[in-house]
Image (cartoon, rainbow, N blue to C red; front, side, top):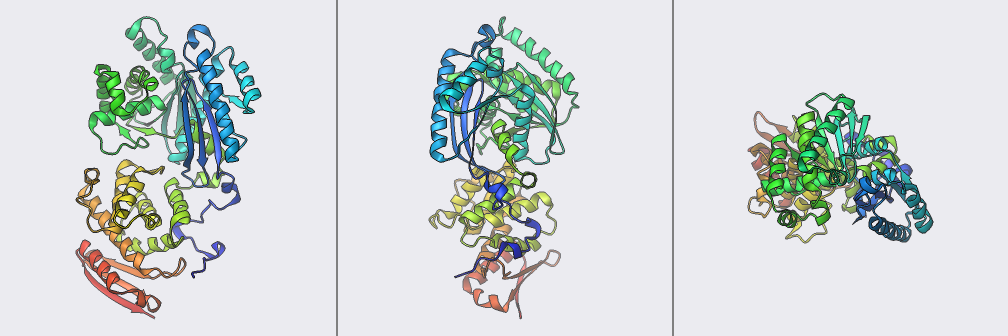
Length: 515
């Protein structure tokens, strides 16, 4: 039986020491937050010890607390009943999970309603949940911190749209700067008199004011946070027949947004709702939200647009993270967490990275993190049936809740892991997704996967390197140097895998043994 190395004696090299076992991170192993918005009330329980937390539990109730607020000044009575019922349920669930006390915040509807404080008191009395009513600038800050959870070091503009408000926040060097709030939530816009023309004029004037207050230059990145933005992105995917329906990190151009806004205005909303799997209550707000987004693009002129599935709830988790954990790469830390939990030999991914690294001498830091992720994930799906293991690894990489991954990078990572388990990747049901990659990237994924496939045959222990690869690109020479200790591992299967790797590189193959 292999003895696990002492973590304190390991040289963690380019990965750095893992943090998820530290006490400060373990305190985040289960974090429950409630977000009481103008349109919905949601409970999220994070498995937060990793830098990219998994969603241990996620439930949303559409309450429309802010419906009619502009006219009455009060919370929607029916929505108030539904919200209280939802929070009562969430508190009971949290008690059963052993994660009390919950962190709970309320946003625009509750802070603006004349009976907001009364509602807060009722929640505390009936459920024991202490509801924090935050102002618009604090809402903007937390939403921006949610973006930082997925994109540490980000810069640009965060736009969070809720039912009754819309917030903007500047990001620069991974920090939140100027913040503003407005009444551009679709529930509020729905109550404007004068029809579509009046709504457009109000949106235009408000966004012009926000632009003046923010003082933004054009050409920055725009991060979109909120259910209405995600719904528009989902419609954009449907319109374009986009093959990967993962909303986080989905990119849209100004032209695409304009086309999708027109597409929404001309479509039957019930038919569109059904095709895009969007709720009735959300779909009813999408046409108004699309007016806001179109004007936002026209005024701020961002260089690109990214959808963020992370927002205020993730911002509350980010708030509780120690600084050292915040600064880590969310992709690499999440993959390390997966390796520690599911791999047969946790820690081997670090050695595997050193083993395959010589094959990619020109890889920049962005590509290196994909290679690291592949090495860490190379064995986490071993429990899957062998006939489906390659597909399971691809599915996991492309659809898992991993932060800091562009869509094409998800496919690149998935294809590399697929090549780890099979030599046949061109006739799978995932083939349409491979069109998101350039030919050179497909070849890179093949080489990385075959190198992982070879390295997996050379396990000794998590702290003993099995050998070294040397690659001379100019002369197409590939050399495998193994220690004498590893010689017995180089049998027929390992030899075949080394030959397959050499073939992928169009190289001559040589094996050497050292004492």
